[in-house]
Image (cartoon, rainbow, N blue to C red; front, side, top):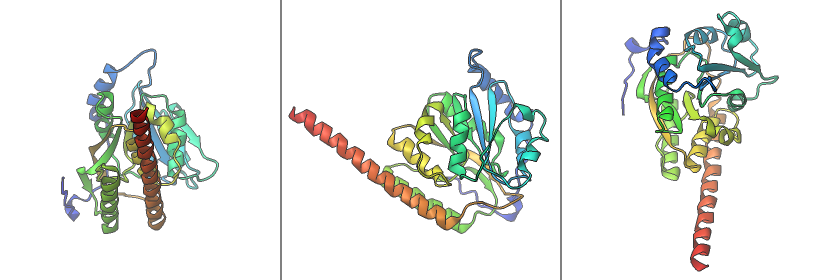
Length: 282
């Protein structure tokens, strides 16, 4: 595990990306390009009141004939939509606006409904994620080594003072996931993820539609026996705005989610045993 001890000297915001940062990814995507189905990568950006960051994120995202960018505005009350329109080529983005604030998970689900790529990426719009890490997340999926990848600052690096409550919460969830489901995910609430399109129906059936959606995705994939891989990414200090997460609500929802899926796991195991016994007797 990378300790990544943070000091004031290395606290910094996300640097800008340019085309040279994506050359390796562009070459990789070109290898998988199919003229009959040109879009092979969909990038979903859930958006809620991020007028200070959304423009720079969009300007730094990779642009390629194989990539589509899907923005789900979860009923922002600021100038986020106007900032999108300032980006060159914004008319090529798929922009969908919720008529009411429906939550983080719902925004991702809406994005999946419009995604046409073979691999889907979800990425936060608060400026903490670096677009050049998209390649780290999608490569294992295209290479057939994973179905679902999760970005991890602990395998990569982070450049901000991590609140103690955040780290303790992640460790607690990590231990619960490991004990009850046999899976170790350190940065389990990170929203920077990628998955094969075949998981869209599974994730669209989520019950926790706020930020606990991140935990539910992991459990859905695990119980369905999909391959999950944690990948190194960089996470930067948030320069503008504030987190929309209500910690107490999120904590309750996460543990409710874990309980429900543990009961589901128990039930599925019971069914398997009954089928085994029935097959043995008959």
